[in-house]
Image 1 (cartoon, rainbow, N blue to C red):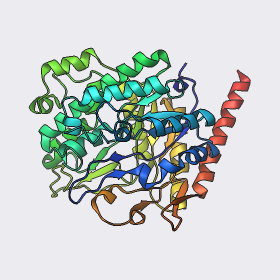
Image 2 (image 1 turned 60 degrees about the vertical axis):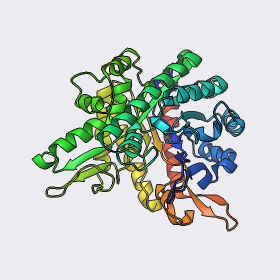
Image 3 (image 1 turned 90 degrees about the vertical axis):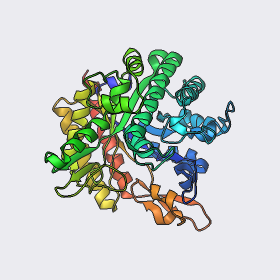
Image 4 (image 1 turned 45 degrees about the horizontal axis):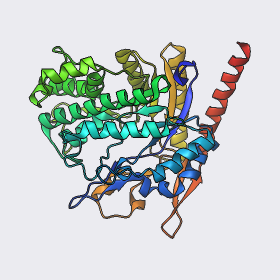
Length: 425
């Protein structure tokens, strides 16, 4: 039986693991592990997650470091991390792809050999660490990949428009499907697949004629990669024409239906301050990154909506795989308490929510760091259970804050409830 089938609510944490190692004029590479000194402090970092009672840790692999050259594999640092997982008993949920591809892979996701390369990498990881790592997220937030790399021209390979979006979505989906099949071949029934996407919502003047088509397209696009990998794109899908205009053929669509994979758990990332975008009458919203829409804080209303929507759409248990607010300690504790209560309420109503993840374990740095020359402290996002504090000599201390105590209280309560139920059975 997988952990997701035991009827409990499992508490998790995550370590921010965005990797965009490619640079160009005006853009420096970003590696959150380097920025947060996780490479040097991984052993203590995993201990912090254990100390606050987390059962699961969403943790990503720096593929570009593991594969520094074609055909060359360097697992030395990852070996140490996996050994630390064994020592702590903390269960990793492996983020195989959190945006970054190897530096030698020309065209990144648009490279015709991308699916084969990402599949080989995933299979090698599963074969090497299958004794400790059995839970996998093949691609974190593929909708964000497709938008940033394929529509907005914001991240490599800097494609834009409908054709770019379709091309990246299809490539990601092919790699996703092949990756899941490869891991399943390595691990068999031991493997658990936690698909994860961003819970993006659109509100406001969404039904007025000037916005109706854009909103419909954006809503469908939110689910596009998951629809592809689960075999849900046919001639009636609202974006099938967009895919075909981007070079996706009927043969490709048949392949997806014939090789469809399913999530054991459908993960949804939801940030109350940023996951709901607002359309306004009289304002052009073309969907491009240069024309961002304002956000609306929809709190637990939005959280309930995205978790219920994904549970119904994909017929799988759901997990809140990222949530937090960037703000003061009191604001973070307030959202922690409110969101945990909302998850418990959904479970009581019969929605199969199996996990809750606060993201991240410790603070992180805003992605805009990539586009400036400013020092990292100017991009600090106060999000974590532990503050990142400059030590004056280039390092970072982890300082526990009251959010950690609040999270630990929730994990203790959940363990107590689970123990009480077990004692009555």
